[in-house]
Length: 354
Image (tube, rainbow, N blue to C red; front, side):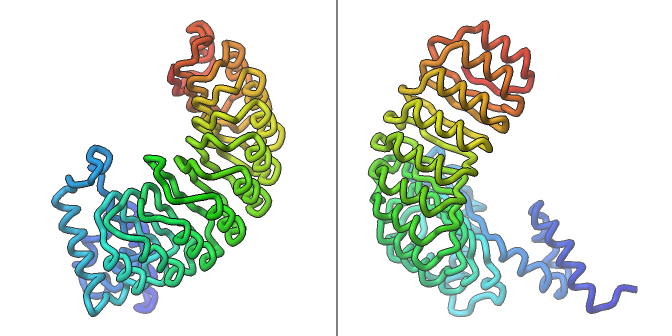
């Protein structure tokens, strides 16, 4: 017979697996013990994601079920008496939703253990509760604020100063209308030395100096997205390749000042590279790309869309990239069908767009 003191521990282990398959909720209604064991696990990870946002920019077409759940959650968090288990929340995702300052503030005040915070594409709030993240979420590890128009330099500066353990920061701007500037990136470099992931996609005002500061301070960096930045040059990319030797992915779409010099430096120093996106980097040629192909055996994803590479690159990929799973060579005018068919004959499972 199982000892009664051990039973809750066993239930918690079982319920942890049920939570992964979203099958935990019905167990709350079995009895009081099951509720006590299951409720804290449910509160550990809270997600509200508006799937319709991708079809409707204003996110007005939320499903009735999502709307009802979100309304109930807002009532709970803004009520005078909070659930006992809300302090267990470590992961919060509110994506593509209209949310208010008061709602965000209520969550921050009641949930001091948040480590993962995702507010991508949400709207209706100002920078005030975002600044409060600095005060109420000192344990934060993961921050994603993609396409949040309320974000300012001050927001990120306050957060990075108070959350030194941050490893993941995503500040992508969909419409290149951001309020984030180079001084913010310098603050990130100064106060977040453990950074592994930095997404600045669509941030047009980030310059070489700030990225070079990241390279000097964040030596564990593995992922960098500078897509749609037309002022970044080889100076910044070479600094990252040199200062961050374990880089796994570069997203450099439409970084039009990048040349072969950067790509050769990446090939020389970042041999654990897995993903390289060079769409519309018109200064890149066969010479540099072939260096990547020969030097980075773990490469899995390559995008050379709109680049003037030739069949030579395709044949090199066929011979050297044994782990490649995704390749985009669409709109590359000097690549022939013959080389593509040869590549596909060597790599039957390759997902290729040409």
